[in-house]
Image 1 (cartoon, helix red, strand yellow):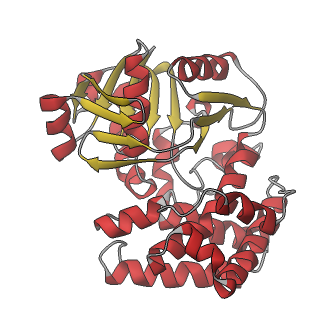
Image 2: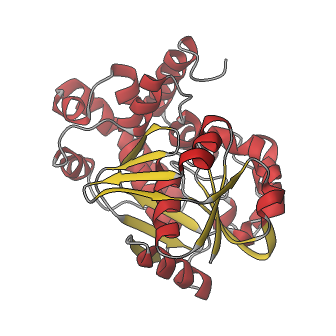
Length: 327
């Protein structure tokens, strides 16, 4: 496949390196220090198996890369509204766009409605509907990322643990294109699964990390310390209960208890969430996709969200004071 990866950070870099290593024609849309590093030294992937280097085409202009079979978008959610229109040169009549991003995607509510794109955009993640206008819903394949990785330097990726990627049609069901993308990912060493209900898979992951991420950014604590504090744990359970009620009203019910979900996370030991990594590095945080969108959807479906609102407000204020979120 001819594949362009937009955003060569941790997840995007891992996907690009693995797919290029398995024989696909991979290019990168990048800029600044990352673009310079890709051109000078290639894309470096470090893991328990050692280090590999992939030389891939890289540009800061989509027109130079041309029309693709698959475009993987691995930007931070807050960067996509401004970048979406610039991706048009990558898109041909059959091009698939697969966001590999955290949180609630811009298409989440539109995919659940017969009205499709006519649904009011989620202002928290797609202000003004700019993403939906640039990337039409029929192009989209949903993706849920279940693995850990980091980017300690431009165009350098460190894979932690996990290989699981869940891929599915936004409106549910199976398709040939979903099977083809899963096959490409599996050939690159990932545990790729085709989902019959990707919205539900997205909401389940969100339910687990929409609390751990901002709490870790607020406190600087690793996940084990967060879950071992009884007061913090109680607050997280209340917040998760609100998110579960919202999920039930938008067709994404959760059958697991909050306590059981916490137990799964606790078994992983202490680790830094992606939001904590961003906060410590002075990078803007993905607060809107992880918490703001849940708060917005809660209002639309009539679920009271005092704990989600508290978490959103506290984290937003902390991030604004540190220059990690716009005022």
